[in-house]
Image 1 (cartoon, each protein chain N blue to C red):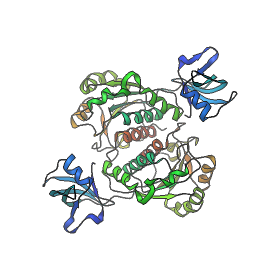
Image 2: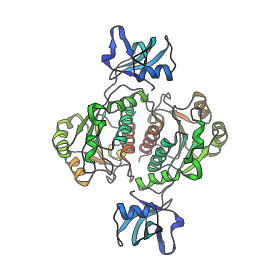
Image 3: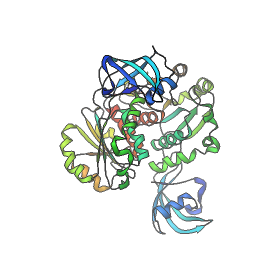
Image 4: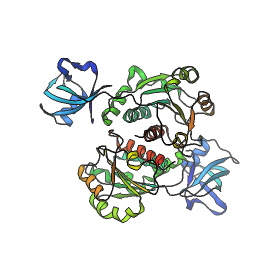
Length: 249
Length: 249
């Protein structure tokens, strides 16, 4: 945990925050903080700053920490990339969500596809926003505060044919990752990119031809990583990182 | 397995290869191949081509496959990036090795650092080149054949102060990943890079200041991913992917 994150609703009067969970355990047992110490802290979807520890105690069987948050700077810009992803196994999804949050993604659309196992949509991880834990883990790691918005789409065609056209105007570029694309992201994008990008990465096993066709019908451009066929988790990190370079970051 | 890989010593006269292990199991049970079918195949550190299945059988309790390899094209170029990495937990190392092989790395130097747990050097994974399995998994996934050469260095200072100077002439650029660098890879490298790059990525918890100083003394340039602090596994994939873009790939 490189950044202590908290929710807007946790702030009481005078910017006081009372923590009584894994975060206070971490502050006391791992960081060994004492009253008067400060930690890097951030408000989810808000600014980062410092948390001054006012008091330490025990309550309800947990370590408890009272701290005062002082804002430094302003909140995060919305990341300029949104991600469509064919749904993967829960264990891989946890990892990808944390990594995507670390790298900065605005929206994440988890969708069905031919090579998605139907059972994945029943995973406990997708219920009651349980995946949120992994997004926050990624933010705590990266010292970022922008929490990606996740939505789940159980039918491929309605998502691509009906939903995508309603959001397409938000993007200056829509890309679909496909090992047979013949063009890399760099070759497609040139040296510099601006505006928002919508990136679609396939499930384990990749998109099938029909799906690629449907994306192309909606004006997505296929891009590859050379001739390399990457696993979904590798491809997400690789392409998000390449987009950072192409945006000049 | 997107590419069937085999070792030079497995080729007998007439380009015949006899497989009696997980590969033949895969060809028969997963791919459902029959005599006359062909699979994409590649020689480790050599060319890719096709494997025509001549016969299928059972021996020593395994499925057995006899195939004839036909070369198409030439062997791989040596990747233009070598990677120094602070040694990480075996479970993370397996993943990183597969991903690095998928993305294309020439040499991988696994080194000690302040935040490396000493016990990691005793891991079974490092004995008798057991890590090779994960490199090959990455190549099979990516359809590549260049097997990275791994070496293990248990002392930080002799590696950086004595060994690095003996290889430095091979590189046009040496970079050390450091979240506080202040400059991204893009800002450091400009739009285009050529020649070989040596990239050093810290262990879990990152490099300590002393280590960064030692790298800088040896002419490494610190680079970051903005202000983001990435896990070792994310940073390796992210930076290797960014180097691909900067090389124009």
